[in-house]
Length: 501
Image 1 (spheres, rainbow, N blue to C red):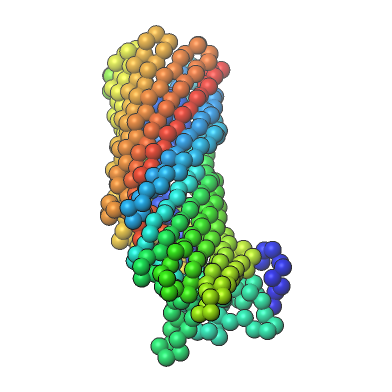
Image 2 (image 1 turned 90 degrees about the vertical axis):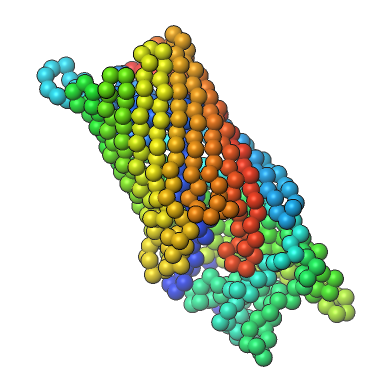
């Protein structure tokens, strides 16, 4: 067997793979673009407008609306405040982040002769498609469930011989062997059995818990997440005659998420053999994706109309996990024990694929000459159409996606008023919950404002946006499935510099 001093052991599970829960997958399916300050200030309602670097990400025909070659970039900061409620206990956690959010350029080829193609544009834009930076704390006294139920659920079908460590074996070696031959569940049962949290009853032929929480148990759950989904648009568009624009994007996606959770329990019932449990998990998901967009814009006097098709994003992803379990206990003689089971194994799972749902965006805008404009985008997306592959490995997950998720309709509204070289902007977003059950996640709203100033060859813009959302976070996917209510206020401040050339 392998020696426990080895820091990381890489393994591949050929029998049972473990993917994220549907809750975690929602982050992969969701787009929360963070673009130029003008785009953000106007709520991202650019599907019928174009003429902004981030508008390329909404409607690829938008690059042909430009009158000049442009390049620019956006920097920003974000603050997220999470307030949690768990068994009537309230906690608050906040975090800040500074980042480079967007960069892009558009080049124009104008037709000075005859023909129906007035303009050809080439564009490139890179921007944050979703930021995963998110920390929250859940605390409360649970009178119903403990983490022991998670381990018991994962022990079904196993016995002590499966979970024991022989004289010539090591914790790391057996943990690795179980992962290769029995999968994720067997590893969880192994941790609990080796830490003396569960024991086996030969009469009933099943495991049972040594924890007593009949009078309740204090639970402390910490989640720390970082990472980003960056989307790169490679764009081609044309202006057909005077009033029609057509475009196409080929998009690549670069995704990285790192989530660490720590779950601690203490203050069990007086007669409990278990006095404290500390369970740590780390999940890293990374990979690449490919998608495309087709779009068009029509000008009819002061009115603008747009439509965009966003294809599914075809991701190829890989997961890595690490975990450890520490259990404190006391015997009938009052002797205390501390059992730490840390295999120091990095579980590396086979690549898998996710197809996110496609989307249709319909847009309209009215332009009041040089005074300003109003714009609206309506985005329709059916989250139940998302799918993980190979299907034989994710039958239950795909079934959950199909039954729990639904079609959403998002609304973006934006307005701009111009006073000579100064522009004042405001926006609003209504974001539909992908869940059929609104206890899991409610619809969310964002409000934004900003301003910009045109110096001629250089433009500078500022925006501030506040997004408020409510959702129920399930602590674990099995056993300890109690929901913590999380109320989030997410504010983003952006500054953009745009140069004409």
